[in-house]
Amino acid sequence: MKLPGLIPTSFDSRPHIARWWIVASGLILLLIAVIPSAQADDSVAMALNKPAAVTPRAAFGLVTSIARAGNRLVAVGEHGWILLSDDNGRSWHQAPSPTSVTLTYVTFINATSGWALGQMGAVLHTQDGGQDWVKQLDGLAANSITMAAAQAEIKAKGSNDTTIADLQSAEALAGGGPNVPFLNLIALSPTNLLLVGGFGLAMTSSDAGASWASAADQLANPQALHLYGVARQGNTVFIAGEQGLLLKGAPGGPYNPVGTPFAGTFFGVLAAPAGQLFLYGLQGTVLRSTDAGSSWQALNTGTGAGIDAAVALQDGRILFGDVAGDLLVTDRAGAGMASTQAGEPVAALAQAADGAIIAGGPFGPRRIALSVLPKP
Image (cartoon, rainbow, N blue to C red):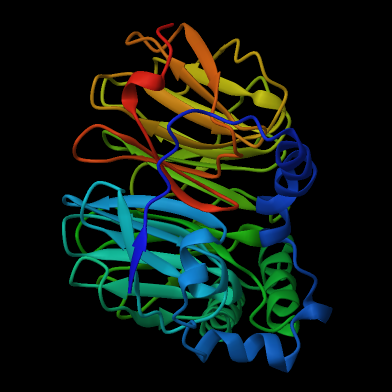
C-alpha cells in the first residue's frame, strides 16, 4: 500500500496540537516503560502475536523511531505499524508486522539486517531491509530467561543481598506477565546484541537474536531503573536511563555508573562520529562530553521541553527534537546551538540519503528540507 509523504511547505505552529503533545507526549516514553502489571490482561498480551492491521491510517499514527537501511527509511510506532520509504521520505508503504503492540525503537546494522523493539518485550528481526519481519523474543520468554538466570546466580554464589535482590526483581517481572517493554538495542558486532528496557531489563544475544541470555547482572543498576538509550564509542558502551543514570563499560560488560550533572531522566545517548558524546532528556537537557564521559558540558538548548530524539547529520552537526516541536541543531563543533519550530512534536529523527530530515511524531513521518535548519 503506497501512502503519500507529509511534506510541509512551511511550518505551522498548530498551538492546540503542541499544547496537547507537551502534556501527553512528555510522558510517552515513561508510560511505555511503566505500564502496571495489572493492566497486562489476556487481551493485551494477545496483541503480541496478532499481526498489525494493514491500513492507510498507519502513515498518520504515532511514529516512535526511524532508521536508515541503506537508502531505505524504516519507521515504527503504535499498533505494531512499520512503514518503509524508498524515495527519501516522500512517500511511504506499510510492511507486514507480526505484532500489534506499540513498537518503540528500530535499528539496522546494514541495508538488510535490522531489529524493531516494543511493548510486551517484543523483538522483531528482518533480513531483507524491513519488508518481512519475524518475532525473536517476547516478554514471556524474557521473563523465563531472567528468572532462570537469577536462580542460577543464587546456586553459583549462594544467597546474599545481591543475589536475593536479583531473584526478587526477576519474580516481580515474571509475576506481571509480559508487560515490560524493550527500548533500545545496539549491535556490538553483526551477531552480538545488547538489549535494554524498562525496570532495568537487559538481554544479550551472541547469535543475532536466535537465542537470548539475561545481562542484568552485568549492569550496576540496583534500583532497576528504566534504561532508554545505548551507544558505543570506540571500545566503550554507554547506557542511559532515568534519574540521571549513566553506565559505562567495555562491550560485554560489566557496566558501572558514571557521574553526570543532571538527576533527571535521559531519553537517549548519542556517540557522534567526531568523538563527542551527547546525553539528552527531560527539561530540555543536552549534555556534551569530549572525554568519553569523564566530564560534561551542559548546552544551552533554550527549551524546557523533553528532548526525545537525536541524529548525527552528514555535515557533522547534531540535530535534536523535543516534544514542543522544536528542532535544535549544534554547530559543527557540537557546542553552539540554534533552534526552529517544526510545527509538530518530534519523537524520532533520521536523515535521508538525499540529506533531508525525516521527523516522526504523533501524526506520522514528515520530510523536512535540510535548508530549514538554522545556522548556529
